[in-house]
Image 1 (cartoon, rainbow, N blue to C red):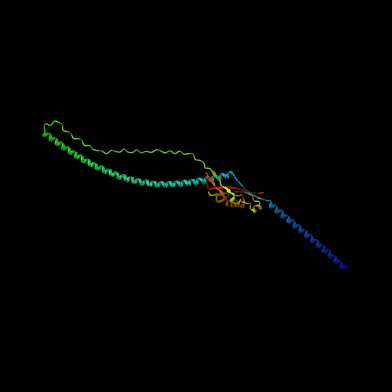
Image 2: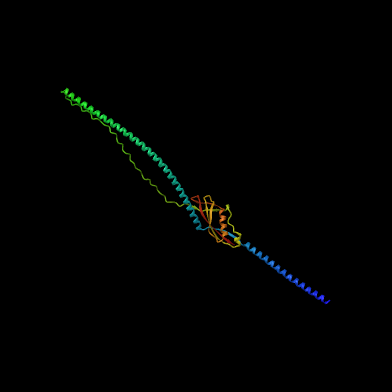
Length: 287
């Protein structure tokens, strides 16, 4: 009877020890799970508290560079317009010169014909004058012969014979040359005026502002991104590039992508919309 009792007691003790170890394992596992849950809650709460803020920074150097680009573009457009005007004027001058040369050729031809006509008329008058001179000389000789005959016939004649009138010849008057001359035209030049230049402005109602990428918040990425945008006279972005990197590609790409979708109030020179290159600066900060 004593041997079975001893064996039963040892089994009971073993069972109690096993149950004690199992309870310890369960408690340790429960404590581990509680620790994991608390750590996850704390981590997520910390992540939820970090807020990314994107701020546009206006710097005088960027404004000056944008104004300089706008002024240069306006001067380039003005130079192109002036070149087109000069080409049109040159073409008009060539056409006018051609018409003038044609008119001069016609006038020279008409003048040559008139000179030929006048020369022919002068030659005709010279021939007529020569014929008249010969006729007068013949008439004078006839009168002198008659006078000698009359003197011989009437020796008692007392009055001197009238002398024949000298023939008159008409010489064409020489027309005086018309004076030619010109007066110099003086043009008063006013000093050049500096044009009034306004920089382009983002129309935020046409697009969304840059948003902080979630991966950048988790990686605690911060910095300042500077971009250059080519904006045409209608306010549309034609091209863009990263001018100065924030040191993080995600932040740079988000800045350039967001601003490239925007419409702008275009730059203007003396109130006239002008294409230009704008410089924009955005700061990425975590709070």
